[in-house]
Length: 395
Figure 1 (cartoon, rainbow, N blue to C red):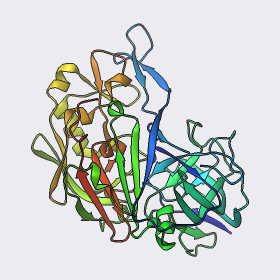
Figure 2 (cartoon, rainbow, N blue to C red):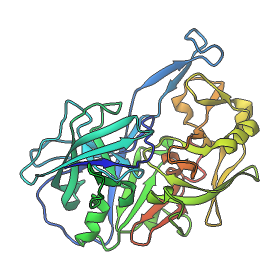
Figure 3 (cartoon, rainbow, N blue to C red):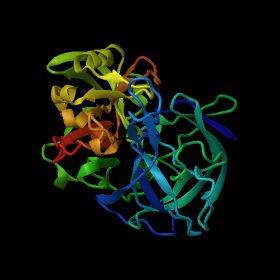
């Protein structure tokens, strides 16, 4: 039977977070909270742009695209190793993106016969493959039985090919499957779902802690609860938005304020570790550009002069009555990635309505480098807390 995924979040492969899994035969053990370290592996993709005429010459700006991976290991019982993007904007786990490192079933692998189609971004990128059930161990610490894993029959659908697939950590509802005759079928459970159902963790909770690029190369995923040792504030919870279809994702309601003025009225948006930008929609983004004086360059990025950066104000997302401030430093790409002394590149981008007009913003992984975020499937809530990196000036 063939299944089609009817909705999926945007995936920005301009910046990617990776986790590596290990698939082995092991028995589950009950653990209250399990911390899985991840570390970043730098990419090397670069592009040349000229801000005046868009041609290459002596006045180029050299931009290192933000391909920095949080990575560890995924190994089948046949000893093959895979690196997976940590993606809270989708919920299906698959391998086979790298044609040189295809999924090889191990002794515990079971072919289900399910054909799966998953559409990413605006629908122009599609995964197709066959689902297997396997035993999965994360970082030789956390074991999941009968985890669904897709084996891609279309390698190379994402660039770069240095990673092998995606670890979908969005809510189960962010992946809807239907059969060819149009009838709904049972959802394919995520790693968090399986850990909870199997009693390995006591709560279906995922906590994510990332560090700004120049403050370190590490991060931490916590399963079962959040890690309060890295928090500077209490955890503030809000319900997942009720606005469809953002409600199918890790979506929350928020307004956006720049320099004390509301530029985006209350709307819904998603938290997506598979996105390398923080995005706001439509007129709000135009207002932000007008206030900051940012200039668009040919690749679609936006730059500030040093004087404009020195005058950059606070951008705040108001979620559940709490202000989550992004300092000027949190609104730019690390300057070590832009080999030019006179320009600063914004990490704030325009939100395109991929999920329809209900999606007013996306909080990509740069937001999670400033705030600890908890995803609680048990209570359908998302939590936010500040860390020592909330106001870091390392960028």
